[in-house]
View (cartoon, rainbow, N blue to C red):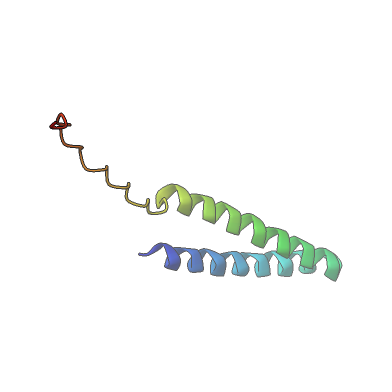
Length: 80
């Protein structure tokens, strides 16, 4: 699975968990503003944790190291 696919899946899961958190908060009797805040906080928390996990498991690709300069030939004495 590619890194991009994992990021999309994490964001989708974060949104679903945020929606569930908002619904549960509303069901427990909180105001709409509190439910939206709780859902948003859950989205941010889950997405952050997921991105940290992806960064740990699949580090970004490293650029190849630049090639070393070609070795210099031996200097020869100038002919006079």
